[in-house]
Image 1 (cartoon, protein in one colour):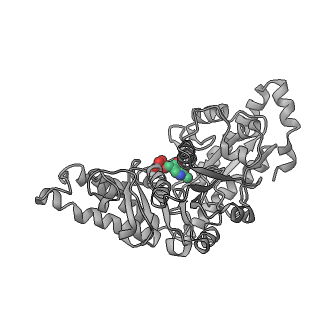
Image 2 (cartoon, protein in one colour; image 1 turned 135 degrees about the horizontal axis):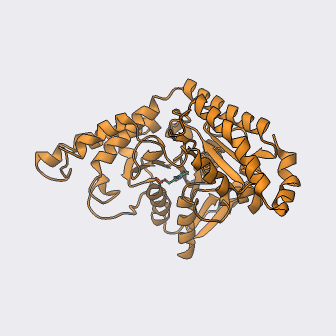
Image 3 (cartoon, rainbow, N blue to C red; image 1 turned 90 degrees about the vertical axis):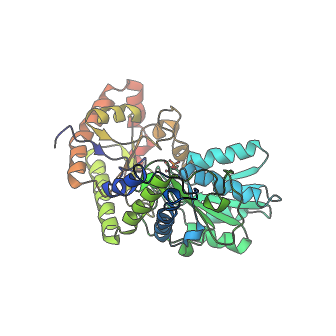
Length: 401
Ligand code: PLP
């Protein structure tokens, strides 16, 4: 395989923009550049394409298009969901979330705590799963919203959102889920799931960065976060980003067309990568449950290896992977997701996430595996005797799958 090709194992960070998506949006950057709120045709003719895009994203999640609000990204969608639930129920000042959420939720909750709201961060166990009993015990009469991710971006582990939503409904508590990592990888139907609010982001499904959506079930109380013009039925002010809405619509159609068969193929490729790693590289272990999880993600701890150094060496070979979520990469702090699962900071810092995509081929996996064992061995050999001893005695040896 040519070294000049980028071998991409970081689809949970972002995905390439599909050529069909670029084609769909281009006319809205060139000839169709009007403002949809204008009274003349140059603007008015954009209302149809926006609504068609809304229909497409709604179809992807089994919603009615009137239940979909376009936002500028997943982060805005999540912030809007949580604050809307609080501001529309002013007597309820408690939020339930988990210790392993994306920073969009984590930092939104932290900011709300500074403003006097109370947040319960539910712990997870070593395989990244939740204790449902503990969850039920955390609910209070003053709980305004439960906000939990469906699929963890670092480990791929899935939370039982359907069960969680059923409990919330029984107790009359609003339930929001961050489903940003889900489209195209699992079937997504808001009615089957039973959630009140759900967040997505286009760039995880071969759309552009900078556009997301918030699903709000009909009848759910709502307060806008971004106030301004009457756009999005007053639910989100700001002149519409027509090209990106259209692009999201097309990306949603492509994600909707993904078959169960290709999802299984993706899981098989990921499983194959995992088995190869465990077979060829000693002292490695998967972080998080084998099932249920996304079909494309694996998080692996390589004992005795600094993940950042490994990533740099892989980059020299044109291989992209991640040591955690993109938003926290660059900081030296170990991943809050992995430490919440009980990994030590050293183990967390030795972890690499490989996230595959429908574009990932068997050749890509073979190319990665033709280099990874050597690179890991070189890094281990170069490690200080203290680090080397630590990994020889690491618990990971016993846990290796
Ligand atoms: N939630 C999860 C699980 C994510 O993986 C991401 C992106 O990495 C986000 C939320 C934020 O989405 P965006 O980048 O569109 O703000």
